[in-house]
Figure (cartoon, rainbow, N blue to C red):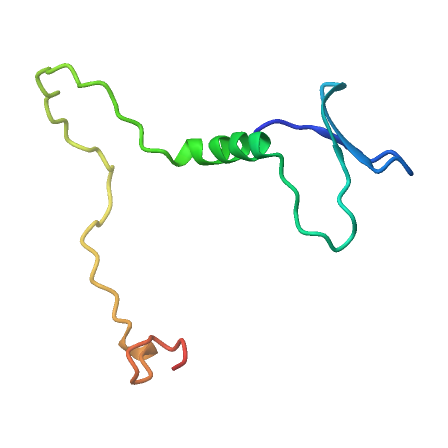
Length: 102
């Protein structure tokens, strides 16, 4: 997971080969047509761990207490930044769904 692999399905051998950088990583028997998915439990656990890793909550080390940086004004350049709120009522068809149907 997370890398490019080559998948080979040799003709009439009933196997599938997974290769990474030309080296065979794993070989599996091909399941019969119509059969349920077959997972090697160790491979499934590894794949799930890899897939979920970016979504796991990471605990950061305690921050070193430091004085906050002084606030600096944001220079937006010349322009009018006082903009009126947009009136969307013209799109309301009475259901409160802004013209997206009922």
